[in-house]
Length: 104
Image 1 (spheres, rainbow, N blue to C red):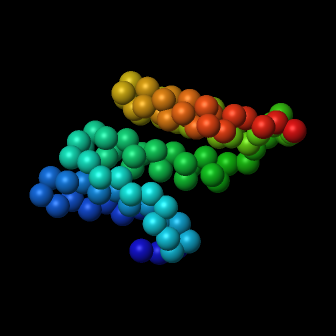
Image 2: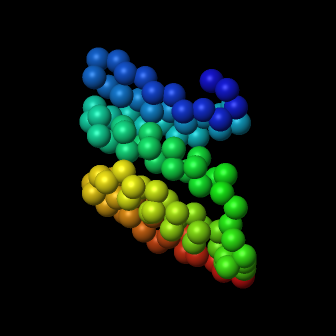
Image 3: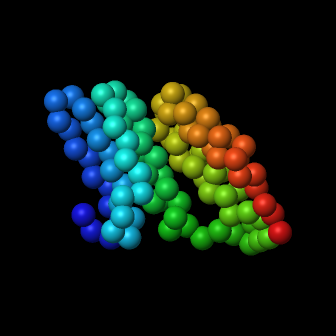
């Protein structure tokens, strides 16, 4: 694995999705459901896509997650998988219930 990497391993029907950041495993997902594994793979693809985007001046003073979460929703919708879109919405709602937006 390099500095930031996504690795997918399949063994006897078990799919393991491993994210490594700065040399440390940051997330490890294990499933037998290929659709779930694909969700987590494309979730990371979306994070990578929006990470390279500049946040516009209209978001100055706002919690950066407002832009990121909006962009995550837009990009996930492009895959046309309602289940993935719904799963993302649940994930984002859970994040915000634990750590609400903090605008300046």
